Amino acid sequence: MNSFLKSYLAALLAAFTLIGIGFLFLIAAGASGKDNSIANESILRIQLNGEMRDFVPRSDFSVFGELFGTTYLSMEEIVFNIEKATSDDRIQSIYLELGTFSAGTPQLKEIREALKQFKAEGKEVYAYASIMTRQSYYLGSAADQLWLSPTGVMEWTGLASSYTYMKGAFDKLGVKINLIRGSDNAYKSAGEPFIAETMSDANREQISSYLNSAWQSTLADLEADGRVTAAFLDAIADSGILIRPEEALSYGMVDELLYEDEMMERLNWVNDDDNNFVSLRRYNRELNQDRTSIDRVAVIYAEGNVVLGKSDMENMGSSTIVEALRAVRNEDRIKAVVLRVNSPGGVSLAGDAMWREVQLLREVKPVVVSMGNVAASAGYQIAAPADTIMAYRQTITGSIGVFMMFPTASKLMREELGISLQTVKTNEFGDFGSIDRELTPAEYNELQQNVDHFYDHFKSQVAEGRALDRAFVDSIARGRVWTGEQAMGNGLVDLEGGLLDAIRVAAEMGGIDGTPGVSSYPILEDPITELLNSMSAEQAESEMESQLGPLAPVYQEWKEIQAMIGMQKRLVEYNMNQPL
Image (cartoon, rainbow, N blue to C red; front, side):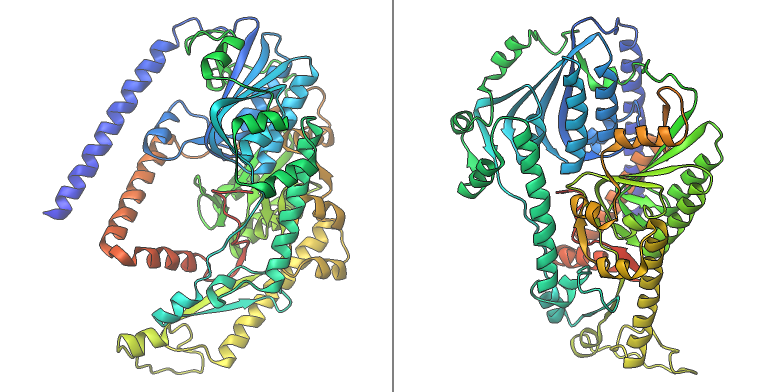
């Protein structure tokens, strides 16, 4: 009866969802009959709320992501439309509505650079916030006028990375995590929180190095905006957590303190129906008249944790990316390819599959890699064969190393639960993988040799793709994490620049005359199917956690461990939902 009721309720929810979709579609269809032409002296309004991704599939049903889950911002959509507005005589200025959002500094750097090009045409940019975070200040600082509410608040702190070390908890549970890393992978800290109670010196060294490098680059960008110096911003970050609006004004960090109605008066903005304020969604429907060439550049978005199978909003599936790479390789109108990588890596087999397809693609067409917030481990592996690799200074990359984790639970099973497995085998390693006993020295040695083999192969891929001396690759690998600025100095990255820069470089390499059209890949499944699948998965996850009760956090940790069992090329410390 209970199973029937759950199935019935799920079907009912799906039915209401589809009815709602139909209803909103009719509303959208009716609205399309209105005069939506762009007026002269219009203002492009960009609202920033939610989590930013490099690429969010365009869909008239994107509103359902807001109703049932996280609101996603598309960095691609924002920068492409700013670029379009730059040469659109009808767009006079841009208004940035700085809400509460999460984005990586390199993503915001992309937007900042597009805004600079917009301003170079004599157009103006305005930005307003009630709550000013580090991220919103970094973006808003690029505006001609940056306004803060008199009753708002400004947060200005430095960068930090914190990791939960779980060894003590697993010791109490009677579970041991065996971490096998490349023999010289002192910096490959993935898995360290499961085998140690404190951070290693090597890990602390590299985290401090890349955090300080990214922070100094960010301060330099802000100083270049002309409001305050890098030294002052650094000192302010040491003086407290929150800055009151009147302090931000006196420091010169913002230009004026305005209430919302005063801001609207400055912009001659009557209300949300004001036709002179063009939303990003509405402007996105306008054709880009600058795309003059019939030849195209393909942009393949490789974003999320590297996994086997298909991609979704959180994961980069190898089969999805391989299919996209093959499609552009065989498309005659596509003359060059930009591979946009925003990934901390993941499953080794998945990384190898994509690396091979990038290598094959490069044999027939120019390939330019544009790195996003992070392109590390397997994320760097798939970038290595490209003709040119581009990144911003704050990008996190490198982490050339391999590891695997193998959990055993002999204490839990034998001493705590009283369970003993009795085994009969024909050969020495016949019962390899038994969780109820520790690994033997011979088994551990076999795993270590296997990890070293894959690590050696990884370094060869980098040396070949980057045309670097193998001994030099040995010296900069070891699992070490670098910023884009550091990677430009050691040969892992060629040029500084973002997505729009990469498209221009690829077009030139592909011999395209005029401004190329851009085709975005991969083409993900339709939004209704994705929504229903997501709802089903979330329901199952919620039911599992409710049944586990207080053991739910342990279950979540176990899920993370399961994802890292097997050969991995992954920077575990990087959180895609809270990027630097």
